Image (cartoon, rainbow, N blue to C red; front, side, top):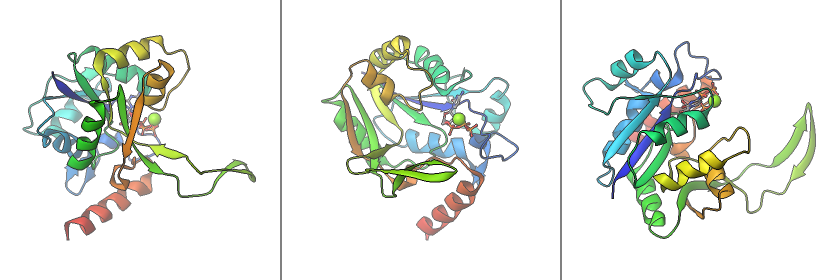
Length: 220
Ligand code: CTP
Ligand code: MG
């Protein structure tokens, strides 16, 4: 069956405040979205890459992709979930790995772990343990919450395409920050596999300089 990577890149990147949507910002000489595309294209099990962009961004995408050839991008929506649904509607049945363009440094090993878990589960997500103290805050520090057994959840998140699309259509939970919570609400069994700190999302302005420095260090 077909394995598709679905990259959602229709956000505005407001917290990054870079002037251009962050997915088109250059990191180590290459647009953020091109890093994600190249990582997914390098994996032999991925048959197809579908990108979801914001309205009016096809010129930015074409410039970022250069001579990489891709299926025509789909136009996303107001919330991440709207963009995911638009993308899912455009991809064939089979396995789908839904990935944030904002997590550009994806290793073959993480994809391997996800695909292996999908052989026995409805879904699979990369996770890392929570290492900081977690507490409520409202100006003043509030109660500390136990962090034992908590994980932070990254992307790509793998599912059967028809099952995750049905889960999204059935979701009534309001804004969702990822697809695994939607899958779980629909009763799908989502496996956790080991994530990677290199997959941490680039969200704020300082994350971009830090990512550039880490890449330079990794290449030495
Ligand atoms: N995304 C999307 N469609 C939206 C919102 C987000 O495709 N309507 C994508 C982003 O492009 C990103 C991923 O979802 O790859 C994770 O979102 P986030 O990090 O919040 O990116 P932005 O929404 O672009 O940033 P911000 O929230 O700071 O504006
Ligand atoms: Mg956002």
